Length: 262
Image (cartoon, rainbow, N blue to C red; front, side, top):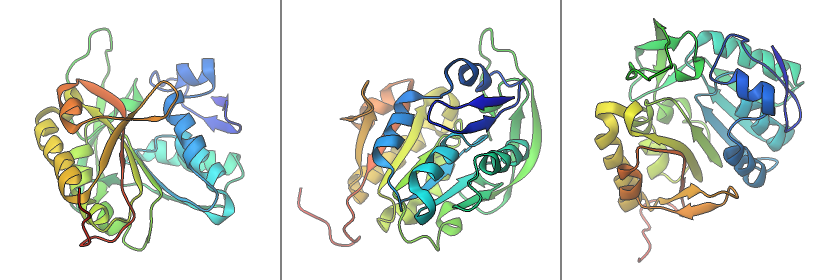
């Protein structure tokens, strides 16, 4: 199914996917708060990393915003969605842009892992088996996919202006695998999802990593308000909430090892 996007451009999506397709057909857009945040913060020449890119809604948007002078790197574990992502870059005439697509899961180690590809709600695909949801019957196929540490996969990238990560509960392992990038102040902003139910047993450990980012790496935490503007939030408030779809971490660009006084 070909979608006319509200931000300009086109997107090919599976017609039998109930997670993204209905909203895209009706509105031509997904997650307007995050879409507006991209539009107001991503500039020509920026480097953007999209972890959990799916069919490429935010990858295509980022590629349009950074232009031919910028760079976009997309990670998508589901091989079917990854093929559609590449097609979507092609139909939007973005093949002359610096856009890299990697059919890999962001993880805490460079190993093959089990990935549950959802059948009906493709956006629910995850490394975790999700708890049952009332009125949301689905099946998944377990496949083996390559996984990478972002510290290693992004080692050649000097600075990342925005890293967006939405991987349905896999965030703990992905953050474990990119702590060097964070400690070295090579990422300016991270947008991620906090979802306690999807994180499962990893929720408390993920909250500990977020506290480490706050206390040792000077990460400043926000959520996006109704106008897509950052609004301060504490890690403890995130941890108490069942879900925050658009949590934001911002970092200063000073070098590690030169801590400022508080």
